[in-house]
Image 1: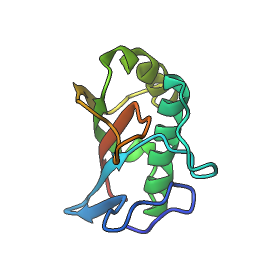
Image 2 (image 1 turned 90 degrees about the vertical axis):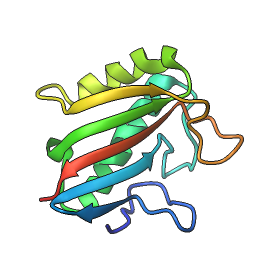
Image 3 (image 1 turned 30 degrees about the vertical axis):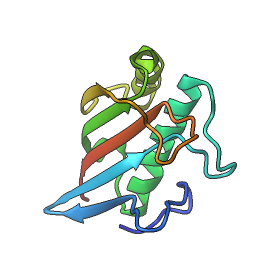
Length: 126
């Protein structure tokens, strides 16, 4: 999948996703703002940024949030699920995709980050 100029850069060897069998598989999408290269501390703002990053990666392949069929939400603190759900309902006001939330030890891609969330996304390829 092409890299989106509107999504944060990935570390070497990491791709935002792949296209296979009529689907797009996005991995480890976090709430890092590509303009500042930082993650907001506020859980709601970080959730919104993560979902904007999903939108940007999808757009690079000609897809939108309407193509999303399944999201796995990884959280290091299940108490932050409410803030994520608030953002989720704004980005998916009707017919949201299937979703599961899973508690994990650390949502960061590298030590010392402040990621509250990491998302794996499956979408239909347009």
